Image 1 (tube, each protein chain N blue to C red):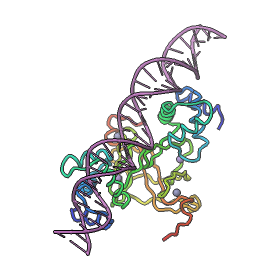
Image 2: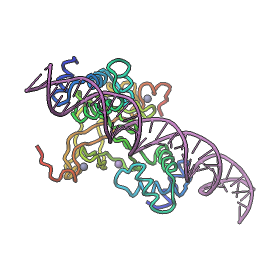
Image 3: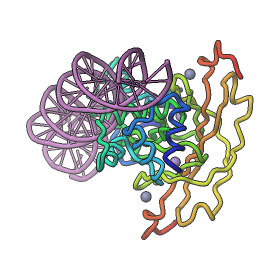
Image 4: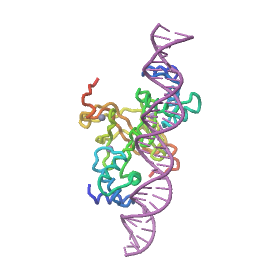
Length: 141
Length: 141
DNA sequence: GTGTCAGATTAGATATTATCTAAATAAGGA
DNA sequence: TCCTTATTTAGATAATATCTAATCTGACAC
Ligand SMILES: [Mn+2]
Ligand SMILES: [Mn+2]
Ligand SMILES: [Zn+2]
Ligand SMILES: [Zn+2]
């Protein structure tokens, strides 16, 4: 994805395209994992432009609010982020906690009866088990 | 669920049945919501026996490790807990963040192809949208 | 290009959530 | 009743996130 695509997606969300904000988006887009705010902060500051901690958090919050980034639901204490855009599910490793993307597929939505007066927007699937790395040396059964 | 049931489930997990630990289990079992550690700490200490903060956290960790309690995957910063036992899914409100239980139903597991060398254990479904309370006054479309 | 200013950035303080430490206590079996 | 060891405790500390208020700058109008 090119520089202009990022710039335009920021602008169309009413966000200025600042070097710091751009760097967060660019880093997240080249990631296959789900970095924490601390990891994003560190990665962005390995090169110019520098960005303060507050700015990194501010930008993550703004990008999430704009729908360009999401905070994934995990049970750890540190928020983990990925770019929205391509729909996908997640696999979380029981052993090492790694969060991996999984191919998206449609899930039967809940029955109207169980939904009640709630307004349904989407389903999200979390698979659990052992990741490829943690599987090594593991004997099933 | 009776006193003895809790006691036995603790003992069969190799955990001593202490008043503090029992209080955490008892509170979680009467909850329909998904309290944070701070809420559990507060609730437990509204009456005897008292429990320190460290003990509340220790017990939650031990109960999770024993499989009697689980930490729910949510995107907030504070861990939220519920008792395992009855399988169910979750509905998370976009607006107020409330986590509600939803009737369990089986989900088609991912294709072996997308699973690769991972070892699959279970699927967990998260529904998103607006809870009943946040629906009030909301105009769809 | 220059001026304007709301939005953005910053360092550091503060808040929130969770874990650690080491001494004291008590559960449960012998 | 005694013994062993898991558990509890207060307080310190760590990890994560937000706030503050001074300063700066991106984007737009001219
Ligand atoms: Mn992802
Ligand atoms: Mn639940
Ligand atoms: Zn793993
Ligand atoms: Zn709600």
